Image 1 (cartoon, helix red, strand yellow):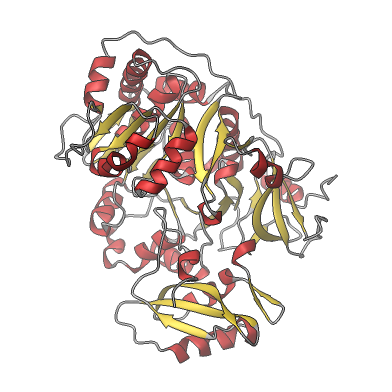
Image 2 (cartoon, one colour; image 1 turned 60 degrees about the vertical axis):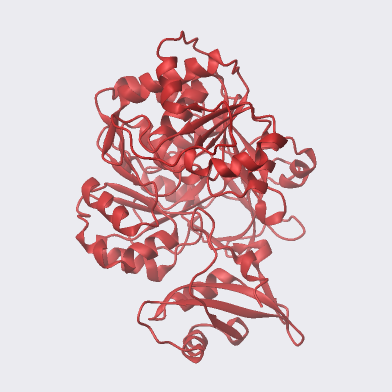
Length: 548
């Protein structure tokens, strides 16, 4: 059994007035938490998108109507409902309607292929899907192989005052119901409030596609109430009730934006500007200019794209007091560029779908780019284990294993996976390699499976990428291992040049040689136009391993 070693972060908590524990039962359910916000902030703007605005009272009314419609369709407590849409006003209305009807939401990436969608619908057992009409062709291909019988299609303007032209639903789908029609019908139907407890299922958050078929992390209401309470207790200055304005460019179907941007900031009455397509940088920057955000969250690639865009300097960042990064390592060079534009570094955090997601974050007192993912959140215990499952000491690397009220109960209907996902005494094995410093700051060195072994030496791709990105002319890069007869594996680096840059392979290698020991220097450097990325902007190293 692992009795946790001394927790070096507790002394740092004390110096920063951070509580060691939170109450994970502060609200009986996410329903209670969000319903109280809808009453408290009824007159305030809750969401803006495409020039349309919903108040907290609007979200309350419309989500109640959707819940009533779902109940009339036979949806009952514990049912799973799939939601497959980009960031639109319909997303928060649909989510709140689903949980107020007593159901749980299975979040689906709208860019999924038919194969990925089919797996998720079958695995979750969804009979109802709420889907953006522009991606219904994917559903049409496989709906016959699933249990889905109710298809609700979303238009771009749904929930707002005026319709916005939207692609029609795929003609192969019959009996679909428009979201706007469901809301209207629900307004005339009775709604029965469902009692929800902390143990009730809230989300199926699919993850782990890197290791074969994706598994649904089963997150309950208590997991998310706890994570919201943990985050609020950790950085209260960034969560001023009724005062925050947040821009949500990360997709809400992803757990980071879902928990931080939506649930946490909704609970404190923030005004949330939704960006439907952050790849359209001009429109994205227009939203940032109009919003003048106090809070912005992103992944490294999103921050990097903003820092390189010539129009970013048109944005008024004078109110911004939190730029939060997660999902993948934030690179120091990107944080420096962000600071040059906004006046403050990116605060990095760490989390996973299985942990609702936030495990650690940099406290408000850290002004510089720390290069770490910060301290464990209150009520969170982290141990680092070596290959023999022994706890390692400060300064030594080990697998990050987490215990806390935000950690999932397990993967949906995956007893075998659950046996290996947790230690015998209940710590969740993240598969990430980390190291603690003496103040309790956690640095993620890398994914266990991404590690490259050159002549017996461990090479962590994050380190190589961070060094290479600091070279002028490198926009972004990704590092993978390649088989090598002499050394077992060799370091291979894929580089995207910055616009107008003319750097060569030798420039990159020479720069890396200055910064890193020889075995870490890329043996192969290949210039590419772009890197493969997930829908959230994470670079997919696995896709690069097969590139010849």
